[in-house]
Amino acid sequence: MKKLLSIFTILIFIYSCDVENPGPIAESALNTPSAVPGLVVGMSADLSFAYRTTTRWGSVWADELTHSGTFSAPTIFSTGSIYSEDINPWWEDAQRARWVAENGIERIRETLGNEFDSNEYVAKAHLYAGYSNRMLGENVCFAVIDGGPREDYTVHFERAESYFTDAITIATNLNDQNLLNAAIAGRASARAALGDWVGAAADAEDVPVEYRFEAIYSTNSGRENNDWPPNTINRGEYSVFGTQWEGLNDPRLPQQVIYDASNDTATAANGTTPWITQLKYESDADNIALSKGTEMLLIRAEMELRENQDFNTAMGYINQGRNYHGLGALTANDIAEAWGHLQDERGKDMWLEGRRFFDLRRWNDETGAANNTFLDGRDKCVPIGQSELEMNPNL
Image 1 (tube, rainbow, N blue to C red):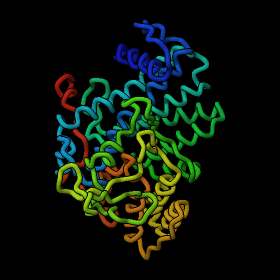
Image 2 (image 1 turned 180 degrees about the vertical axis):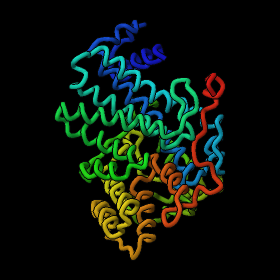
Image 3 (image 1 turned 90 degrees about the vertical axis):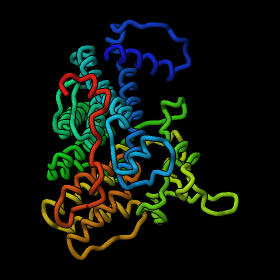
Image 4 (image 1 turned 45 degrees about the vertical axis):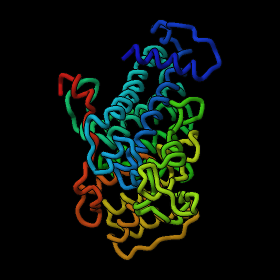
């Protein structure tokens, strides 16, 4: 894996600059302060690469889009089944993003010494380690760390919380409010996933409503694309048709019906499903949110419903988010109605951002008003990848 890290870092420099390939670079050359920015760019790139698949495949693991194409894995996912052999590419990419960030942090620690806790790139590295672990925790059935045994998936959230906490410390040392917001928002979501709703809400309160921290994309190379336009706008592999989001007039759900030459609704790539494309990502360079201030309001609302059964205060937070988007206020007469609004608003606010699958999973485990039945009879998490099953002696 160290060789993979070295190779990827070299590629980052090649793709980022118009320079000649210097040929093989010794791994020891990376153990210098000047190499740290390149290492951290590599962490960001690996997270973005894994996250673009998380958002697309996650849209049909959840209830965000209808699969309307011919690609084999999403076709199977649309039936509600998720198999190890089908998700293997995602498993490898997601684990790579985690490993590169976590091991890169240790490499940088040895390199920077006493400067480690006051370096901008170290704070970013901890963010990428935190968000990579959160991505895994929100999707996998089991955590498998570096060839180890099966562990509870919440191990990833515990690791994420720890990395975000360290990022908070470093960002505070730097007096960097942007990095601090990213770390606090990330920790809020990790704490919520662990059931620490009071701690999550306390973090969420500190994040401004307009804040965004994003996975970065560009059109510099195919690997840097978000991959949404070719799958949804240029070719109808996914459609909004048949989902609860179809036809809604909401700025958070931009969509468009595609018409054929006869001015009828066109069929998508499978030749049968009506083609309604998403327009949230119209360019391959559009970034994808990892954390947002509006999500923080929804965390605070959910805390009120869970811990205090206070649906009036919860609706206040929900409506703050709606107001930010220029939408009118909602009302609720009881906690059951408030739970319905909360789940609906999270779905709209975080549409196609790779988060819905975990929301449906955790609400499916609930009783009473919080229960959501969409995943009944469907796979509720991503199994261990086939390559991991074949190569890991501890499984």
